[in-house]
Length: 184
Image (cartoon, rainbow, N blue to C red; front, side, top):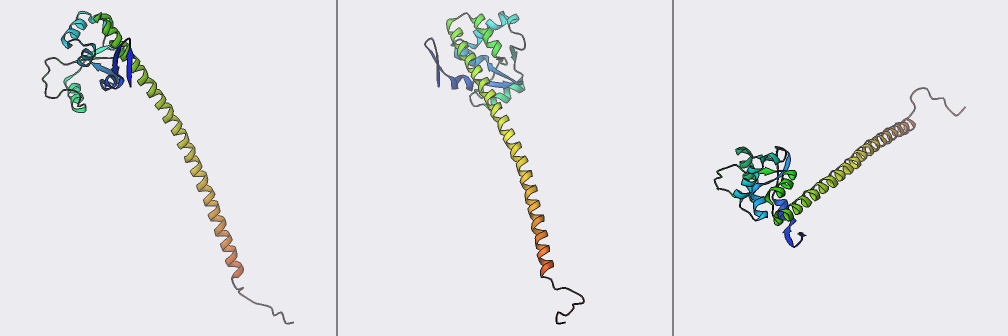
């Protein structure tokens, strides 16, 4: 599905494919954002460094070597074999919002709106997914209760059948002991 914002056309799938989970947060890397904004990664990083006060750790952080190598090994979209001089920055949703204020371009504003809309849709999907999972858990719990109740019923039926069979066996069994004759 393509998202359009004032003539800017970017597939949502492209944006979603550039969102990663790092340190338990949904983030986008500086190089991917630069590609979407159609600016050099170096220029984007320079603007961020000039405005560091606008990017606290909860908005932006630099990946560790381990995090970057894990991302590279998990995702084919990250270019393999490239030697990075500097580890990339990862921007949270709020950091991406802040980027539009430091980049001062119309395209950055439009792209940011598309990215934020995508983040919101992802959150909605996750919320709906959690609701569906919760409903399934409730149904499973009820089914488990019903299974237990059905097992109890079968156990009673089994005991009833055994008692009936015992009663039948006792009726058909020849009496033991003194039998008075009926001839008298």
